[in-house]
Length: 68
Image 1 (cartoon, rainbow, N blue to C red):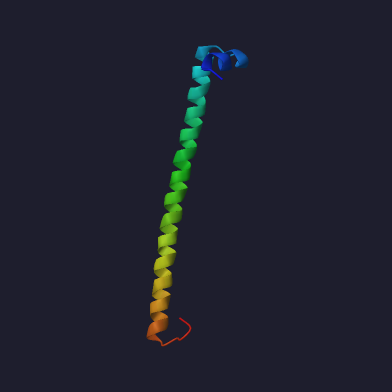
Image 2: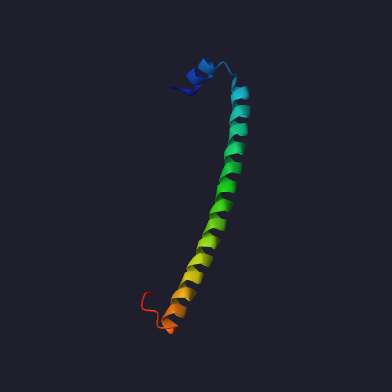
């Protein structure tokens, strides 16, 4: 479907469509920023947990724990 036919089908003018697209763009960009922030937080949490697991394994090896 061409842009012209999509506009005609929606009943919006080109100006209205531009405004609508800008609004949708702002919403999507905000969601992207939020997801990236959560991803960074999750990544930091994963690093911390992996470091703690390494410390636990080292402690088990020092104590001669054969199940480590």
